Image 1 (cartoon, protein in one colour):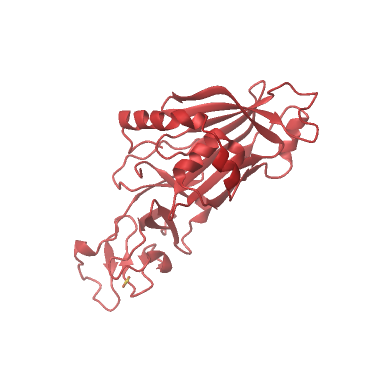
Image 2 (cartoon, helix red, strand yellow):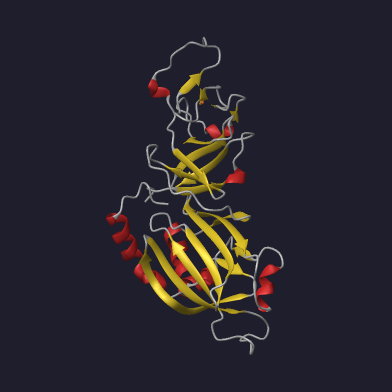
Length: 305
Ligand code: FES
């Protein structure tokens, strides 16, 4: 389940000032930037007495120092480099190495793979400027199923109403799970006499391994209105940590499309309506499990993103 490259932080969340802690399916990970600004990821447990390295600090040389007894580790390899009060030329046994994980940064996300030798993922073409992080008390699998079956349970787009109707069923396309949902402009006069039945659509393209989704809202002439990336990650205790980035299209034709333009148009909901979720009938998600199984066993996972 934890193969693949997972977006464990937005680029701006990770600095060389202070390490941060994240989780991937119960695996604690510490992230920081070294002196060159390169992001590093180690297991967030000191090999000495198991203290979280994220409670320590980043030294001037870019290495991380445990806050308990001061052991110091190199971020690229996890090798122990220093113990206070020992001679500087002391060689330390490999036993005291911290587990190092592979890190790749692009598109404003910092992605981590637990396989340190994994081939890096394809870089993103752009960094979407709007961003945020929410923690949702729902497990990763059910979070993605809710997004497929009724996006309004997990996100909101200002002025947009998601309908129950699909323009295209969930299907595999070029290694992604893709579906297209019909939407309408919302508002006090919905359905508007000035709009066609389905003037806008939401395309959701999902990585079958991680569930990271690219969202694209388009009008009836297929002009893009809003693009976003949603990166749900299974964190600890059944919580899904969702990082997102979004961008409004510069040109949004149509009077109603202007509704999207006032402030941040996308809200990724921090809580899910349990009553609505309980009665939600599986629709698009029905095919997802079988498709994901077929796709992830047919292709190597390590390089997928
Ligand atoms: S627990 Fe980290 S140095 Fe002792």
